[in-house]
Image (cartoon, rainbow, N blue to C red; front, side, top):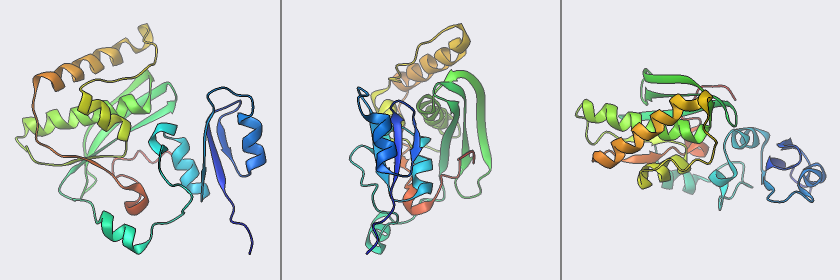
Amino acid sequence: MAKKKKYYVVWKGKKPGIYNSWDKCKQQINGFEGAQYKSFASDSEAKLAFKKTFNDYKGVNTKKATLTKDELAKIGKPILESLSVDAACAGNPGIMEYRGVDTKTKKQIFIQGPFKEGTNNIGEFLAIVHGLAFLKNKKAFNYPIYTDSKIAMSWVKKKQCRTNITFTKDNKELLELIKRAEVWLKENTYSNPILKWETKAWGEIPADFGRK
């Protein structure tokens, strides 16, 4: 039986990127302190992963290309009466923007950016908080919010954007937005469920910018 082809994402290495063999991947990580890499069952999943971070895939089995029927049944279907948020970033850090859309209709509800020297995780964090404030203003207290970022979900839960990027005059506006979002989380309560969008089961989140 022929061995199944794997694809390797190198987030941190001599040259970050996607490689179609272990030997090529190994060249990028050997001798590189703190290398971050993982194998994927398909090229499309590897491309999706490279847009995110290594932390998004810690403990996740990425060797299976598709989910089984039982796994799909367990996940179920998304709640269409909800808000979906996502961010896009050209570089890390780089030009970043975020938005929120109606999950069912994909109608854009809000969009912010572009911002200089941002990251995808910062954008996801700001998008969730923006969504929470928007829904509270609309008195839609139990309306769910979907995001595909576990990191952003954890930052919202901790009421703190735990980024380690350096802030300068170029991204001063972004820092002010982050501080405002953190203050909002500390001064407001909300009952809106913040839910993980299951990309493997449902495809790209409706708020995706489509720049893969």
